[in-house]
Structures are given as C-alpha cells and as structure tokens.
Image (cartoon, rainbow, N blue to C red; front, side):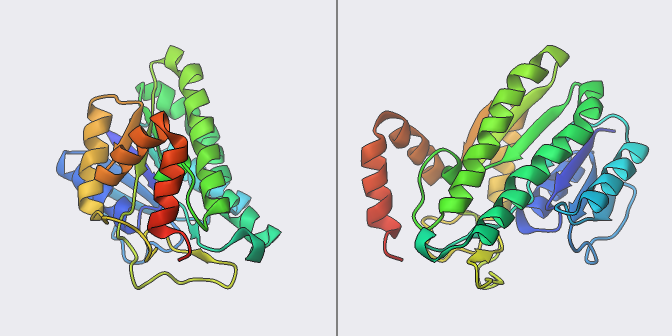
Length: 252
C-alpha cells in the first residue's frame, strides 16, 4: 500500500486529496493544527501538529517515520493567506506567513527526505498563481509562495539522481473557506477565504487536477482555467498580466 503525508490535512483541499488518494488504495497521514474531526482508520492517520513549533514538528516527523519509513508522496499543503496592503502590514505578520507557508515546508522536506528517496517518491508543493505572478494586497503571501517554488524547483535537480519526482501545483482561487476566513488584525486568514477572487474552483476539482498532474509526472501543474491563463500570459507578457490583475482585483 502506498503512503502519502499531507500537511494541512484537515482543510478543504487536504481532505479532498486525502479522500481521492484513499479511494485509489493509498494510506494517508494527515497533519494539522486541529485533527479532532478526523478519525483514525486502517488507511488514515491524523497527527495534531503546529508546524511552526520546532518541538511539535520534530515529534510529528518522528511519528511519521516510525509508522512509515518509506513515503511515496509528501504534500506540502499547509498555509495561510494574508490580505492587506504592505503599508498597513508589519514585520510580525510578514514573518508569520513565511513560517507557515515556507519554513514549515522546508523543515518537513528536510526530515522526510530519506523516506521519499527510499520509495523513489514525490514531493508535491502546493503553491498558487501568486507563486509565479504578482497579486494585489498579497505582498507577503506572494513572496512566501515565490520562495516555496524556488526551493522546490531547486530541490528537484538535487533529488532527481535519487529517482525522486518534485512537482509544484499552482491553483488559482479554491473555495475552501469562503465565509470562514478567521481574519486576524494583521490580515492573515485561512486559505481559500478571499472574497476578491475570480472563477473559484471546488477543492474536489482542484484535487482531481493535482493528482492527474502527479500521475503524469508534470513538474509544474497550474490548476484551473484562471491558473493556466495566468501561467501563459505572465510568461509571455508580464506587464499585460499585471495590468489585467490590477483591473480585476486592484483596489479591493
């Protein structure tokens, strides 16, 4: 039985990935701050963990490796958004976004590197359109996702010699927390809660596209119509893309 680890496993996209993988015969290990709604079964192991707490992260990684020293897939899905102008933001909020979106993923990858190599498995980073293109009122969020992509694109070259696949999925707007943003004074909020998005996808549809891309060993997987258009337009005409983005959501 193949084994996958999914951070942010209790959220909408994490749960959709988990459900679809289990339907295909996988065993999943789910990491999240609150796993009280997740049951432990023969194919599902929830682990409570604050990935920004070094002690909790170390203990969670040790528990994963104890249960499965060989991992076929690690999905770096945990994250938060921040919707605020840079002028109104502060250093603490900026760093919080990076701790969750970037550094937690890096330390997970460090801890699980050998287990993924043992299975000749896959690292899958869940990025965003903001990981390769600008996004209004998301300076910290976009920066963290750009950093995430830079890390995993570089790791791809190092791990290729070990038979490991490294992929990045970049959804546009996935409606996982509309109406439940839990917005904080520093602008941080739950992922998938933005109300200024365009052409929202369901987490189930996003998960299906992501797993299809993994099956095809695609290194970069833009998810959804908007993401694919953004990938193409930003690649060939970045100034045009910025104008279109500002026209669509600028000033919101």
